[in-house]
Structures are given as structure tokens and as C-alpha cells.
Image 1: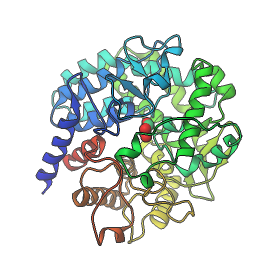
Image 2: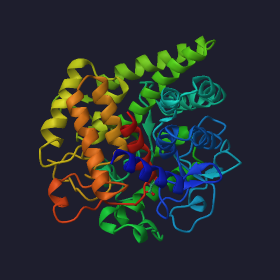
Image 3: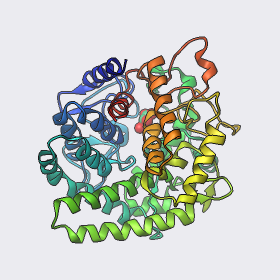
Image 4: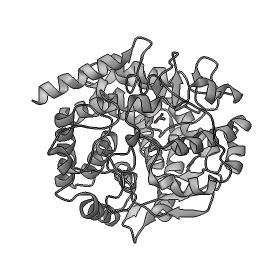
Length: 438
Ligand code: DGY
């Protein structure tokens, strides 16, 4: 059964791999290269085809801009199955954008640092992978430098995102209060959605939400994607616990890898400086004692967004909480997300009125978040609950296939076992391979 599942997962990945050296997340729905998808996909490939794993990250890094920025989508090819495409994003408005590829002008959670560490962990030939990492690692360092120098206006060690697509958790209820502030100024744009021709509209963001998404990018474009202008003008400016956890875990990985490579004391010193400030302010600013979870902070409107999502637990993956905070997080996971009637881990608080178990990031289980949670819980010694996250993950995929997301309510599978969103989704396959191989 385990071997059969791994074989199926490999088939999904191999079918989504493109000869240009990258893997699409999902046929039709996401027909280009996506930033953090590529990172997770490389971890899956590393278990059986290290050349493809290397190629995946190498291709992504080849699209890095002159200022260290790494885009969220690389449009290697034309496709009319996705909106909004390169003609909308117009990333070439930025003077340092790559000339080699069309890309977006927004980014995604910075996973590459820890992905390199994972490739190193998984590789049998350590010398070969280290040689590869040596050629690429400075690009990731430059990317972190970009974040700390351009996305941290108050010098807190906590970087902001200026778009919900940068968070990866596109339509989370977390953003609803921001949309309210944008309601008056957001026009009705004329556009044709493509996602809802692949996936039932009830599982995707609404049209009005898409207008907010487009409007933020219009503002960024009017300012040629200039970071200082965006910090001043964007209605969406959020310190996101998931995004910052990924950056912090990647800092830690870069420190370790530079240590193994040697002769990089200055970079290690810089990384340690960022890391100390980031972790300390993360705990001061984003831990909500009363909710028992980490939360998002709205930097534009100067207020915390006090809701619990699966992002709230990702600091476990990045060694951010102290032992006491880690136990509080586990209590919250068990009491709110982990009832007998549910699969771990819903992407939004199942007890909240905005919980929607079918709609994208407003409730469904996502495999990349489960993967982060599994290693985070294991990391702090919460082995039983970690194992439950793993077995729930395997059970959902065995029942439904390699979907993009899954209903957390067990009762929905009594009649029929179906997952939601795209099918044959690459990171679902890639991370299942990693979980089963460990
Ligand atoms: C989409 O189009 O829904 C993507 O998630 C954006 O990155």
C-alpha cells in the first residue's frame, strides 16, 4: 500500500514536470512555475530523482531579479487557461526585474533556504549536493537581504507582504477586514476568470475578492513595483506568521549550510543578527496569549488580526516558540482543530463563524501545511499528535487522490470520498513521498 501510493505520487510529479526544467502545480489550473510550490516539489523529487530536484530550484532561481527578489510565478510558456497572466502583471515595470522571463511582481513564502537543507538531508551523495548548494546558496542569501532591507519599514525583523497571493493562503478570512477597508476605492474590473472553469466556484474565491486582488496589483504597478512606494501606499500590508516562519527557518538553514561549506563567517554573522531580532519580535508581537496561537498583524491599519489559522502553528516548524508557548499551541490544535470528528489540520478555526470546510483557505486541509506541522510537532517532541497529522494526511490522500485540498470533516466521506480544488496536485504528491519515506 505504501509502495503503491509512492508510485502514484511519482506519476503525478513526473506528469507535471516540463522539459524546460520545472514542474507545474496542476494541469490547467496552474500552468506555470510557482515559487513555493517548486520548493516543496523539489523535496519530493529529491527522494528519487535528485537531478530534477536540483533543476527545479535552479530554474526558479534563474528568474531572480537584480535586487534579490524572487517572483511568485515564472511564466515560462504561454497559456490561456490562467488569469491573471503576464500581460496583467507587467513585472517589467520594475527596473531590476529579470529580462529573461516574464514573471509576476509579487513573491511567495521564502522556503528555498530550508529546501536546500532538506535536499542535503535526503541526498545520498552529500558531496554532490553540497557542490550544487555552493553554486546557488548566495542567491537565497540575497533574497533574504532583499526582504530585510525592503520589507521591514520599522526595522522589527518582521517582513511584510503586500498581497494575499504572497501569503500563499489566498482567500483566508484573515484578509476580510482588509477588504472592508478597500471596499470604497476598489472599482469593478472587467476580467474573465479561468480558475472557475477548472474548479467549482464554491471552492474558489469570489469575483469581488478577485477585484481586491487585482486592485492591489494595479496600485503596485502605478508605482512600478517600487517597494518604498508600496510600503507607503498599499492598502494591504501584513506581517504574516507563516511567511515570517518560512524566512526564519530558511535563515537557520542558511546558517547551518554556510557552516558546513565554510569560509562564510560574514554571512553567518548577518544571518544570526537577522535571526535574533526576528525571533524575539515574532514572539513579542505575534503571540496572542488569550487565543493560544500566533496571529497576523495588519501593519497598514496598525492592529492585530485576532483569528486562528493553520499558519498560526507554523512557528513550531521554525523553532520560534519557547517550550511553554509550544505546549499552548498544541493545546489549541487539539482542542479547536483536533476533535475525533475531524482530520487535522483545518486551515481556519473550525469553531469560527467564517469557517467554510470546502472553500480553498477558509477551512480545508492543505498538505503543505500538514507537512510543516508534522515536522514542527516532532521537533518539539509532540510525537503522538505529529503521527496523527501524518496518518490523517495519508488517509485523506488514499481516500481521495492527490487533490489540492480536503474537507476536514470526517462525516463528509461517509457518502463519497472526494477532495477539492485541482487534481493531481504536485506538492500533495511531493510531500506525501517525503512523509512516507521518513
Ligand atoms: C491562484 O491563482 O489562485 C494562485 O493561488 C495565485 O498564486
